[in-house]
Image (tube, rainbow, N blue to C red; front, side, top):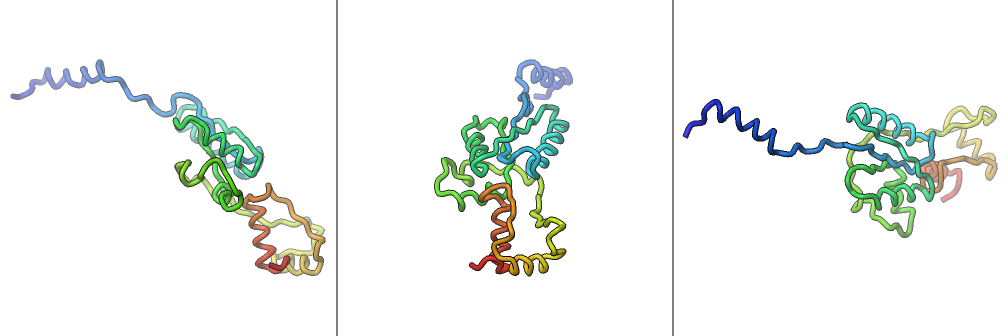
Length: 178
């Protein structure tokens, strides 16, 4: 049986009239949860990402900062959310490190979360006050060894990448014995 031009024209019309269109994602604002405080590197990257996604997708992507407990508060919030794609988590290296630094978590970072995309990379930097007589890493290590117990550093929290990076730096350079 051959189809006539009228029948060919009817099929697309029938599809338009009787088939429900698939809803496009997203049809409502998307919550982007960050376990870091506003103003930090992860927050800045998350806001840039959310802005680009909002523009590209025609829907709001809103950053929701939930710092605390080394990022666990944010991850638990996302873990408990309805798995419908409207609550995303901006992860950092701390989220990958967390299972090694926490005895018990209510979630398994590998099993309970699906990785979507690498969105950026943020390096850790060592900076010193201008009054510190060191302009190179070697000079800094020599100064720290010559002044045991007199040097302090700040980081975004225990178990976060800057903290662990500095502890590794101290150990590998011999600033603090193993």
